[in-house]
Length: 229
Image (cartoon, rainbow, N blue to C red; front, side, top):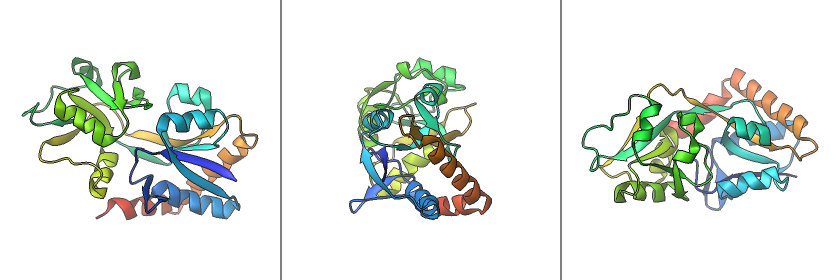
């Protein structure tokens, strides 16, 4: 049995819980690949920092929907990318009636920025240690923005949109998203425990599955199910 964890904070449309069941693009992709490979598995939603630790310690074999930083490539086996998301920042029009002056990722340093506990923000073009990471979920981070605890919340457009569609965050009339200029769409991967004896074989199975589903147009088809209203 392969044990898999995702982020309990929610990462829709890629992973989320509904009616005590893990759903989303990731779950659909795994169902197709593992059915073909004849592999049994189970998915649990954990706090993200704990999920990474459980995979690193070998108690879980896969962490879903992760950005592939250099540090993570050293700690885990990393699959090929299976989707991309756009890094950006959310802010309140009450604090910024006009857009914040962000012409490049370097300008983020001029603001108090926040993110989620356990997340890596190097792909946003800024060192992760510069990001206040006290929030455990998106609604909490947006509350920090509204209260003035931070000015910009680093996030991804697709995730914020997915949470909004599910009713998990309130964007009101004041929360706006902007992409970080000059920062390319971010590749997302699955992380595999280096302590799992069959880790290289599992990585090969997933990479082959991603490639086949992409060639057949199935990856985009699965994603469109959640993205197209």
